[in-house]
Image 1 (cartoon, rainbow, N blue to C red):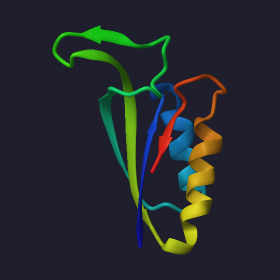
Image 2 (image 1 turned 60 degrees about the horizontal axis):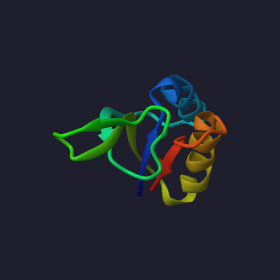
Image 3 (image 1 turned 180 degrees about the vertical axis):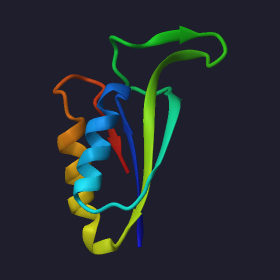
Image 4 (image 1 turned 180 degrees about the horizontal axis):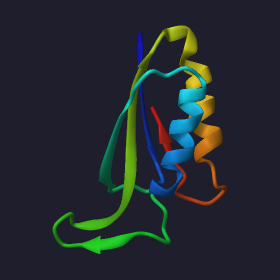
Length: 92
């Protein structure tokens, strides 16, 4: 079994969930988070003294799948989350 973590735009979460369900994922964890990273969407970045820098609201998706299904799940996330703009997210 392998764990996949993806950080995506909040407005893409429904599409990603549907794509993963279509691939047979029985469940996943969805978490609202704030990302402090270079890869966040520069148009949505906010400055914060609390976080000491720029941050963006993103959604973290965590799921467990058989090792043989990892590439299929990653491609489902990538296809559903892609907008073509900076800040589309990261998959680990």
